[in-house]
Image 1 (cartoon, rainbow, N blue to C red):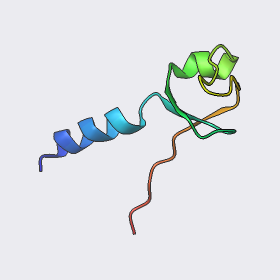
Image 2: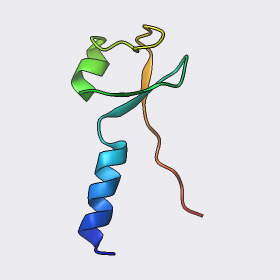
Image 3: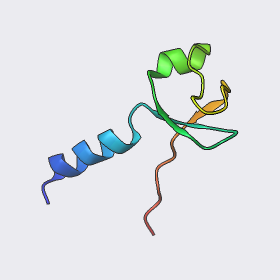
Length: 58
């Protein structure tokens, strides 16, 4: 598999994806808006979001 294809998949899965700290819902949003608190979770309306963590390869 070409390296650019792997990078494209990685970007699609992890770029601009945040996870709610309360209900674990995934939300795609702009990082600046999340940082200043303009983005809320759709399920629980919490503003506590973290970036989706990348899986580690063993």
